[in-house]
Image (cartoon, rainbow, N blue to C red):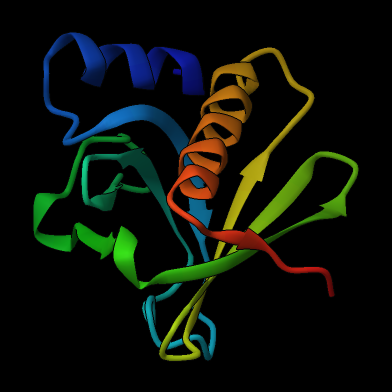
Amino acid sequence: MNRKQIIMQYRTSRLLKGHRPGIIYLKQNKGKIYTQGTADFIMTIGKENLYFQRLSMFTKRLLPEKDFSLHLARIKSYNMRLVNPVVKCLTLYTFEKYYLEIFFYIKTADTYETETNIEGIIKMLEERGVKEMAL
């Protein structure tokens, strides 16, 4: 099942917690927001939170016990960078000097919706006063 089908399946079954869904993956880092191993998530935005709904490795079923959220009021700035020709990384920085690296695939047939929705999420964050940080 490709990313577009996964999103449509959960969108039509009304299991997503927010809007503008995209399939992303997170890696363990020192940012203190996500400290688990590498895993796939569906990221959505709500009125006050970014939601991260965990997907199982092989079946891509939701694992609600491993979900988490990030309150939008905590986000101070962001940075977008190209990791390689098909992967981008959106890094969100908080006022507490923590950060979260959000990786997502680009330039393939099933990633267009994720790319578009992440651009929309960034625009919504900018409307809330979140600034782009140049590295």
